[in-house]
Image (tube, rainbow, N blue to C red; front, side):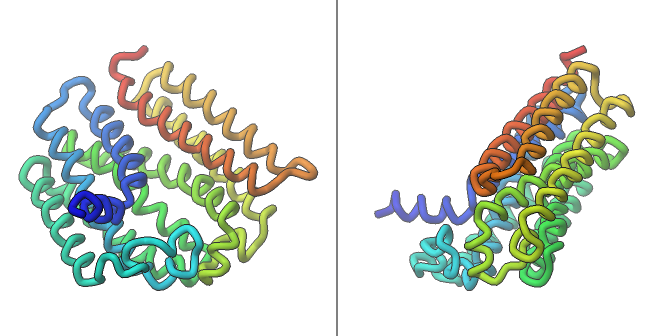
Length: 289
């Protein structure tokens, strides 16, 4: 019984989202550290950011419980089924958030705390409202999703510079085709819940064009890290190669007779490979030519 309860509360934090974002926190921190890693600060940044992200996800689960019951993939979530009460979820989220911010405040710096606060505000408040009203809700959500690497970078450097700004732009550009791919293969779910995602409102072709534009923007953004001297040539070669492969897969979506759902799932999967590759390359850049 206790094991199941722990698992239930653990799943409320959307661990898959946290794991993916922690990779970018690591990458941002190590990129800014340039080989001089302060272990205590590093550990605090990871743990603090994870707790803050977990809090945001639990708050989001609470806010979305009404629309979650209309979607096949979310209708069995603990808040929808009543396994966890709304009051318990709010207390849980608050404890996670307070613990996370205290950890960041005590062992990193106030800049990182502020960046974390901006991220959770956009995710819990602005995105939760925006995604119900406009196709641009995805773009609003990308702001909060671009915060983790910036938080990691600023935790190590204690200042916001061009490198932090480029990391932010990179993650905004990456998230758009990533989430549009999800919206395409889950369009029926979003339509049933009344969420105006781009594929539902504008159709598959318009969505594919937007994905293409954002992949090109991502390519320019990742290259700019090297252009402005934040990363080396090995990073640039690897990332441009991944970008070309991603772009090629995106263009395949315009082929005659393509299965849009299958194509979107594959593009979604490859976007995760791109993110993993990016996180690894900025983490290792200091030891690469």
